[in-house]
Image (cartoon, rainbow, N blue to C red; front, side):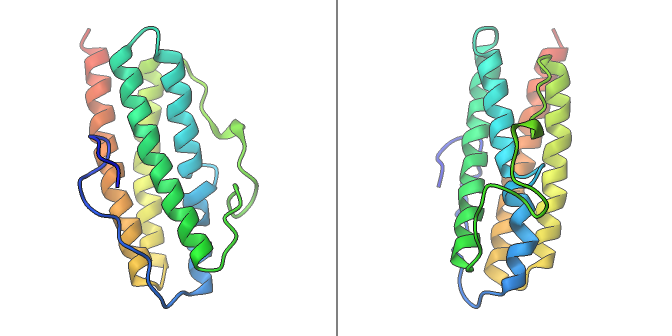
Amino acid sequence: MLDNKYSLDLPYPELEEPFYPGDVKCIVDDYCGRTGEMTAVMQYLYQHYITANNNKRLSQALKGLALTEMRHHALLGEAIAKMGGDPIIGGSTCFWSGANVNYVKNPVAFLQHDIMTEKQAIANHSRAAACVKNPTLSELMLRIVKDEELHVTILRELLDELTAL
């Protein structure tokens, strides 16, 4: 478990049998679809890089968010493999692409976009939790939702700091 302020201090549930083949389909887009964890990782890393020289606090927060999203990506990839699926770097309709990243450079604009995408991730992970048959996978998806809710709070605070200036 990550020990940082970008992830809640709660364990991530361990995946237990029985496994259901259809469960992989329920989580593959959250793992690596256009708006999945891979996109979140790359989005926050890009933003971290472009803000590093101008706003250290924002840059470090974005790096922290990226690390938590990397953990989510790993958890979902490991779950897919454990359930007998193939954790390719792609969703249900296409391979992952750097075109999925929003390359807006304005911090106010990209933070607004980030908040929207975190809310979308919450909805997607919640929907996946309801879709899967495996109860421990459902618990894992709901545990990830808790981190995403924390991310919305963090991003709103960062946005408030920028707009208060």
